[in-house]
Image (cartoon, rainbow, N blue to C red; front, side):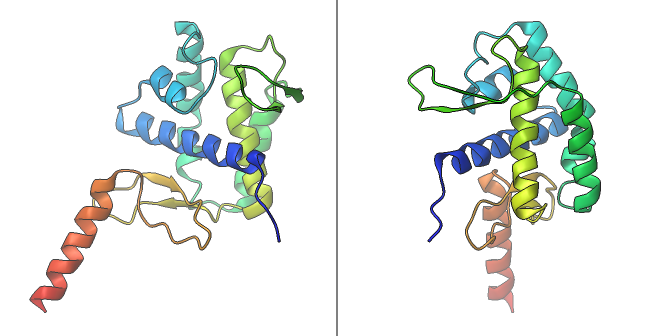
Length: 181
């Protein structure tokens, strides 16, 4: 039996942060520092405003690539992820800090915050692509929503984004339609 490791949980959490940031930037509601802090990027709270701004700029530059994950071929996705990985210095090391268990860091300890965030996101995405392709990335099934989601369910049954109103609206509409018929 295959047991998922904490590493797998780290990848999932990083991909969920990536999706949350992409959706927030797309709809104009992004508070990048707060979002990264909420998703446990340990340096987010103390990162300089310039570094947080660079995260936002770099993510915005890749927004169409992130948004295309459910629709683009694996080969094309791999190409842009490899292109982005080549642009940053990835230097894996094992570390512990802030009472966290032993884990991987993808950049040097003196890397800028934006390089750290981009390396974390791109490496998590690369690992997901190697294991599952783009199959776990989807678009919300609610009629008036096209936000992205990452489906971490065992049976890949997720249909809606993180906004609970989307599922609720859709289920209510389906229920009313069944009652009418």
